[in-house]
Image 1 (tube, helix red, strand yellow):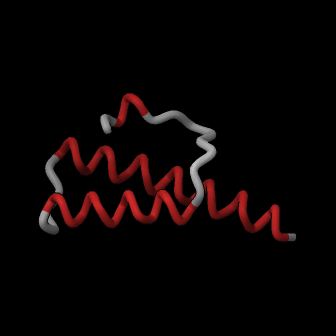
Image 2 (cartoon, rainbow, N blue to C red):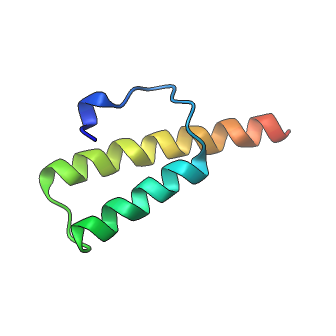
Length: 59
């Protein structure tokens, strides 16, 4: 997945995003390229938004 194809306000769950982050690290063998780093950063931002949304929803 390219960083350009990711959009803000995703409906993916924090758990699904966490799995994507883990898979990215496994594929990369623990060392991210510049493109992988950009994808990782976007995933982490989206994951943080999902976590916040889940916390607000739980409250």
